[in-house]
Length: 161
Image (cartoon, rainbow, N blue to C red; front, side, top):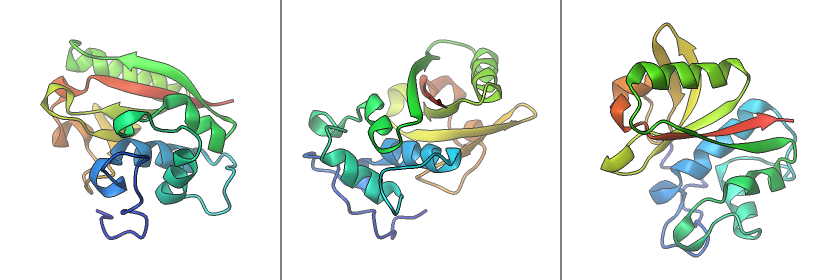
């Protein structure tokens, strides 16, 4: 957990929240950008500089809702492709769809709490029948050991292009 990180208190737009309280999605997208290795428009890139940049460029709607396409404004070759809708599918169907996207070289952030709340993680890789994640809220790495697979409702897809 990085709750003590220097950027954890950076506010999310005009919302009442900051990276620590409501920034799991913005942190996940910044992790994907860093993982991709694409150049960014800021000299020091981290979740704090990402959110600060997006705060001045319409990166968040009212209430701090992330605007998917704005990641490209800071990383021009990191392009939003759309969503992978998973709600109501079986664990196996979800696994196959996520695995397929990762095999294509896509970068995915997945919503893992569905109708029980909201939390976003990075779907990092696949090992056997396990999806390995990078979780901005914990040190856990096995996505469906940590979160109920039935609640993985959607993933956002980014690609380098």
